[in-house]
Image (cartoon, rainbow, N blue to C red; front, side, top):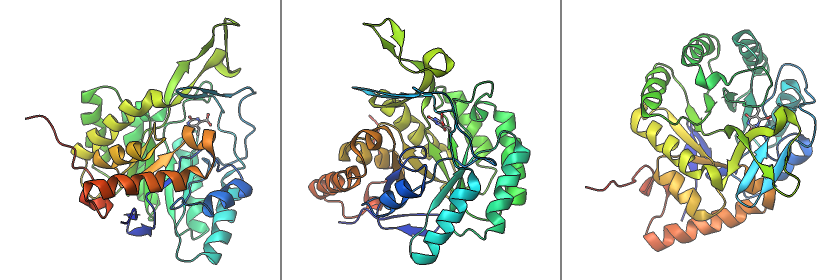
Length: 312
Ligand SMILES: C=Cc1c(C(=O)O)[nH]c(=O)[nH]c1=O
């Protein structure tokens, strides 16, 4: 039984990896994920300059998931690029994802130029969905801007590149976004980022639980699995098959991984549950997925990817 997969013709021996932002902020964390059962890793979204991010507390775990308003703290794209290039020299058969995000299209293009100049051979994840930078709207909800960015990106960047999208909640929005995405040679899209600007309350204190934005933050975990599955499947139904889908959102056991793949995901990313359990989770998720595949008579991901059935 194999849980291997491939994205943009790059092969991974496991279809399960971390979600950007979790266990990927520095060399130490990335090395641990690299040595775990995860098929690969994606870095925290790198910006042109390093960032402190928002004031703490800025992350809070609940029984059903998490809320975060990190504010894009990161070491800067150069740091992640240097680290991944060094690692790539040692592990030639492995491929890695680098996430990046600019605050406008000019910055996006500068980031991609850095990646081109570094002769990066892995896969780029352009984050269009950070919900927690005060004063900055989520690019992914501005369709015209997404179109303009992708046009500029693919006029300037030649390597495999995917985009991290926010969750959409309207069929017409799925249609409109799919129409835009299908115009471009995307390697993949990653659905979904956290559900933006949720609010979690400590009843005893009658208080919010994170400091930034009066307690408003991105929601992850069990709360968002139905939304994540719907976004994966909606785009799977609408996109050119050349554009693969990475499923992110609400994965904490093998069943959740199975469901994302059934909806059309070629790869899955784990955020909140990885934050709670640590990198050992990858071994557990892989074994649980294999057990499910075995019980159903599937030997590889392709046997059931996208094969969700409807009611007649
Ligand atoms: C990159 C910023 C993001 C952040 C953040 O750094 O606040 N949190 C998320 O849940 N998703 C993001 O994309």
